[in-house]
Image (cartoon, rainbow, N blue to C red):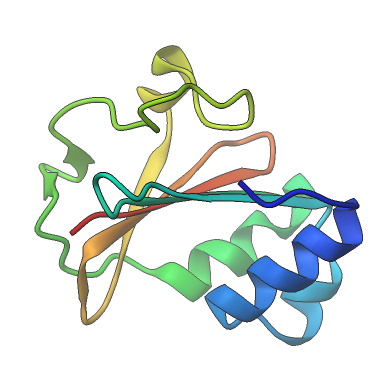
Length: 121
């Protein structure tokens, strides 16, 4: 997990995800965890809810091997629970998106401005 001030976390995760410009500037918080045992990566971004249409347009619905009928088959979360990751209840309410060319990554967007990004192996 990345430690440090919010601005530092945002800068590191923005670089990792290739975020630039207005989307990066409007991030309120960011968290990231890479699990060594599974190689899975988990990120959570917090943005102003009014910015969600711009984020949705960034991700679009792309092909994702991990999605079936537009949603993951089951809840996915870090092996050691993280307070910033979606709860099982929240997970069931997310709108899911893929990333073209990245079949093992999905993005789940909550209406309150939380964005969850999962990258499997």
